Length: 172
Image 1 (cartoon, rainbow, N blue to C red):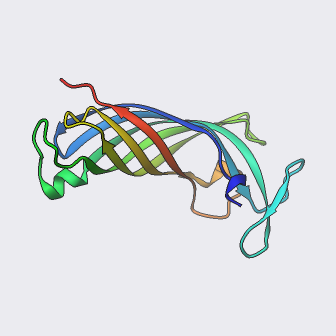
Image 2: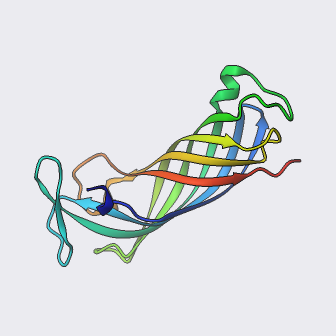
Image 3: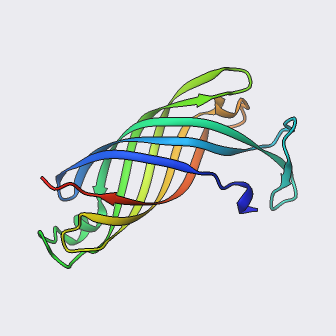
């Protein structure tokens, strides 16, 4: 059930395009997530996955500060459209980066810090030829060491999210 996995999340970032296809950004991401645990957790409601195996949703509070390289795939493939152009009103941007994740309230630790890896694919729909305001849909993956859920059953833990938001571009 998807509703058992939905949680709010915030992102705020600042970036700079160095050339039309390449840029960098610093971003703060976080708030809380629901983690799917395969072991019984006290005082948590349990659910069943597609194979009818029980699991328990455990709420986790966290934040992540990260630095990413951005690649405007639309401009890299089709070329720079020029200032004020009606072309490329829909753009795809990929990002890859590293960060530091801080998890709060873990059961066996008061807090925990981990290095994190980041992958993002963003679709941006611009509303004017100035391209200074866009509606964004971002598929984001944050990956960190397996101690996040205190179960050492895999190589890494992940936070996969689908975000909807707006971006305002300040012009030089």
